Length: 330
Ligand code: FAQ
Image 1 (cartoon, rainbow, N blue to C red):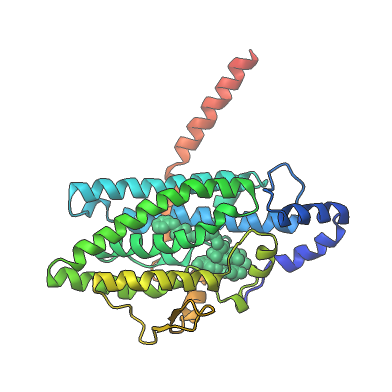
Image 2: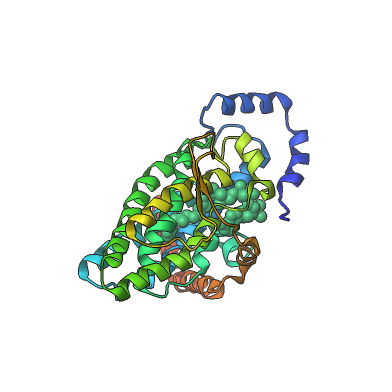
């Protein structure tokens, strides 16, 4: 079971002015956005900083699996599209770091937390991209899961996070389509291409379901984040929606979802229907969260190396700024 900082901050909460707290809760309940200079409980600030920075780290680490294929894309058209997609992910990371910084933690602190292993990033990016079909599967399933999770976040209670999500969701939707289009081409290609597409689906399906986080009854943050309207839907609700939308897409491709327990259930969701699906391997999920994913070490090394290699750029920018200030003061 996960421990969380929230229990600690609950104690701080008791010291906070009850009137301010009540006014804050009322604003959240009225669906007003909370802005950076507004009063907010420390636990709200802390859990938002945690979630937004984890999200930013995921976007940046998430450039690596696909970046690996830019030089090997099968055509100029595919290369141009993939290049644009990976650049978009960098942009998402930057908007999100900016949104998190408005809560009072510097970007450098957040990045150091990632590099020291203290801060998390999405489990999904700890799996390797073995073939070109993986690029299709990532766009279709990983960006598809990201959109499912992020569309409701456009109505999250913290203004800067909600506004960042609007643009991010538009771009993610292009990413999802480019991935699905790769899958269509492969699924309708040669027997070998179809096998590659099926193999990619086999490997990315379960890790994509894990992206939504642990089951609700084992998710320490969900209840409070739902009350504060940081999260608008729970992990299990979003996972179910993702399965319901993705299974017909797999059928359209003529591919098989690697889950023998997958079955349409007419009675589900108050008669609207939905898929029953097999058990996610939560042992695997927690192992990957602990940093034991198949390519976790390579991912972190790549990020640390990029930070070290970029030191001269940061130094040059800081020196330029110092000179500029000197000139202004003279
Ligand atoms: N991986 O109590 P909960 C993308 C941690 S962006 C690693 O349920 P919460 C775009 C969680 O932090 C993908 N850790 O937590 C793209 C918590 O740890 P803590 C990222 C995970 O926050 C596509 C603990 O487990 N998206 O893909 C994961 O209420 C292609 C307990 O969990 C976002 O970050 C996980 N999968 O719910 C880029 C969306 N799940 O800190 C490139 C925003 C849970 O208590 C290429 N984030 N944990 O020790 C969220 O919606 C939420 O933070 C959840 C987790 C749903 C991820």
